[in-house]
Image (cartoon, rainbow, N blue to C red; front, top):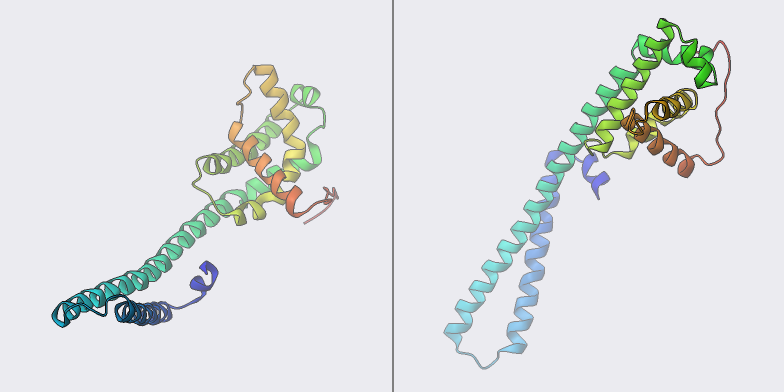
Length: 216
């Protein structure tokens, strides 16, 4: 229903809402007529008339509410989609900047596997690259934890990048959290990594990470 509403124009949504209201109203009249015919055959004609008019008015109000609900639902769907689009754009601009891509490439190719030795030998350039990527992951992870992002499509989109990068930087975060005695160290980034791993395990079972040199 939601997906169908998103594909329709405003005019078509209003038309559907009107037809639905008319259908509900007609069905309500039919039910009222049948109930009135078989349930109260002995009542006075004047009372029957006013009660019938009241029932018809109630049926009309109910049908109007149903039709109006469809229009409001369509507006809510459009609002949610606009919010998701704004989040997509924000994530894209942040994670697809040249410096972000360069930082992730440095991590893929040059970050040592052993975090204890890697931190001891990490150059200022390498530290900048790692912190830049972790800060971006932490930003997105915070939005997820606060449920400001609810669309699984965003998780699907960022999962390949997050999982591949986390395979390198994740051990560093875990080591640094233990060393500092701060299990919450980059906690939002850890949350993002878990969400992406869960999505990947569910939707891409058996898919691993492929490391190649001189890639795009």
